[in-house]
Image (tube, rainbow, N blue to C red; front, top):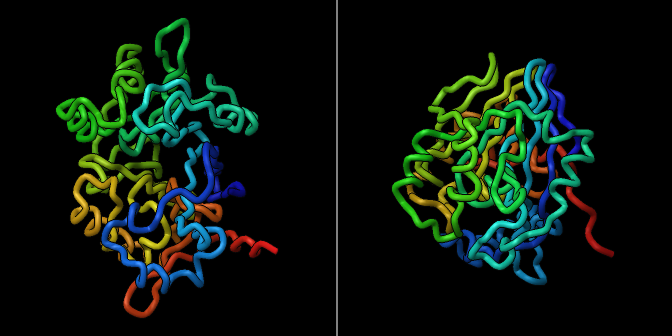
Length: 293
């Protein structure tokens, strides 16, 4: 993703993974092959791999620089974590190298914000040092949703692995955690919005410079959900609630000046919600990739 300047606020991304990942029906159980086929014309080649019938799914963090703070949003899968998914177990990804390539060091992060507490959004919260998990960003306060934290505390063990134990509890033990609620303000114009459904305490981050942007976490996993907002992912705690939240969000931001930045969208991720007959579409800032020759 190219850096985005909102006027006093700059957004960059840190990639951990990009590529074809899920069959449409596996990711979006309410989809049908016929309905997905109707979207191939705008998805190919870089949002849908037709040869393998796989939807493209990126995995990224965002770094936001305001006049007052350097904020890291969602920390991907991380390194050396015990996870039940083989592709995440003891992962050794280029994430930290990509982070440092932005000219940053972990000590320079002021705030870490996790939209929710799934394994692919909290992993780099901590790193392994002398056999124990310690905060990766020693000078940061970490923001966790209060509702989200309470839900996962009450619903252990996590099927994806010891996520609270290795990626959240060490932050509390270090005294760096702050439990936050809907409308929590990091600074004027930088605030959180509860967008429950994917998880009970899922939060989005609003940024208001001379332009408005919203970092949406897993409110949407793939751009086809802008066209088909009733399709919730297989990872959603409450699919019906997720669909209602997503539809309401799209209605609010359709034709606004807001840039929408999801975690998992391909094609540079950022874009605007625009109307189409009977619904919405997503207009990316970056053009589609050229078809393979």
